[in-house]
Image (cartoon, rainbow, N blue to C red):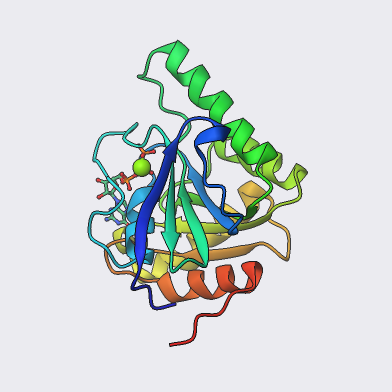
Length: 199
Ligand code: GTP
Ligand code: MG
């Protein structure tokens, strides 16, 4: 998809603050600092629309990016950020859980894992929890620019095995730096959400 029009339309921590347009939503989830906001910028071809940071815990609200009035890309705070106060962590946990569990407009989830590492216990729990709710899940194995080409297949197998991915789950190597995987990810999302932009 060639994105021309995109804007941060809503920022919220509870249901009443989320958009009421009924457009389909695709949420980006994953460990804190894995690269969710960076991936979103790559997908909408903006350098810094979604705020990124080298230290974890940057995104703390649920952010809805309206893309061409066709769908929302939703930036969700990361999990596993241990340094925040416990009360904050619990608050985010509830907010994320409620959004993922109850949001009717949510049609697909992109879960990010770092291609360099074996998925952790948090990732496994999140994946299984999302599966349980019946979502179509796309795994984006990100930061692929940080490993050698020859390592890619091996790392993808590690992720597949550790998360116990099913045959219909998509696993896409991605990089916010080289932009590898952008088109493939859009194709999969467009298919699931059933949109096509004429341009
Ligand atoms: P939270 O909002 O804290 O949950 O983090 P996030 O998942 O949104 O991560 P963010 O996009 O802020 O990126 C975290 C760090 O990883 C930043 O320093 C990014 O520049 C870096 N980063 C993200 N994606 C990539 C990538 O594909 N390649 C490389 N080399 N660095 C990346
Ligand atoms: Mg972020």
